[in-house]
Length: 238
Length: 261
Image (cartoon, rainbow over the protein chains, first blue to last red):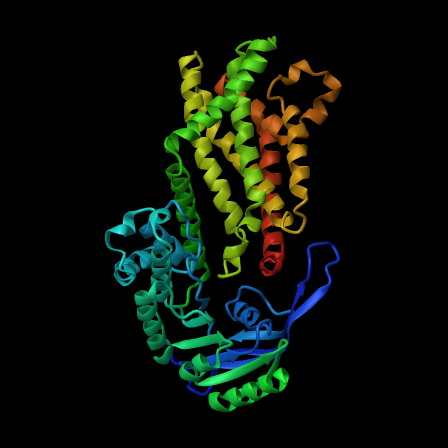
């Protein structure tokens, strides 16, 4: 895995994506993305900012390989594994925490033995102790959230795709998980972070892309793009 | 994470299908007080109803009608439950497939495997019942895996096909249920082919389930060889159906997550 620091590991070129608006034979098309281009470099944290409905989440689904663009293209130069931070993926109420952790990790792309190897760390991070062998239907919602986060945090894909959520759980775990996730983002991990909160983007991202109505408005230095974005919001509010 | 080749990927997904099947079966049994016993009680009660209606109330001429009926019902239920669960599977797993990329063919496979496991439990009960009531293991049992294997291929073909198209036409589910009901009565579950007029035999055997059920009875009750030619045709046709349906599912691999309900 030697990557040239300047060359991108993943690119989008003029990507457009179209949904059918409602279920019928002739659903009217709706372009969630029209023209988005970006380059993602090894080890960087790329922020994506834009208002609700700008197409940010759809963009992450394309990078994760869940859906394919209808126009333009996605280039994954080294077929890296890009994964959405999907909490509680595939959780089943009547299974134990341990079984759910294995299942969820496997849904995120791990082999069973890899999931088993990570299990001790998952259990330790979740602080669930003996509860790990109880069905999660007996858990509080905070406990389920802790388990869900711990699994995702340990699975650790090549490229982490994060949609707004950094941490979860009750106050104490929320702090712990947010700090852990921020440390991971600020490390040499390749991350795409979607948010409409300028403050978080400012703290976490090396570079920013601003999307409006499915079109890339601007791309570049965090500070510069955020200023443009906020200026744009002000004009719209007046 | 390291790069993986095609075989490693297939191994990973196979492992996932098996673990998810295990998990679903475990979850299902954990949900009730009697747990796993329901896999036996439920079909037993279901069969008891048919036994009372057709074996006691409407006395048929067929000798050993109970055994005759139970074999037919067991083979039918395996197919019916797999196909109706499997055809909804891609819709059912929509929330999951919108968060992680997974080959969509995994979802019907999980449901087929779940229903097949339950079928194997029922099959054991059925065989025990046959042995107790005077139908012992004979040399025909050697071809039992073949007959069951061909039915399994047929189930795979049918389930994958419906799984591929139902997400686009959810209304089809109701049609499928009703067609099943009609075919159920035409599969020779309550009657033997000898009881219908000769000129309709051709149409009767157009339904693969009719052949499969008859072959199963030949093996389990009459110590007779199945119709190998018919089995070969069904098996080969099913293989083509499986390949075609998997291609159809992969054709829409990236369309399924975009379907809005």
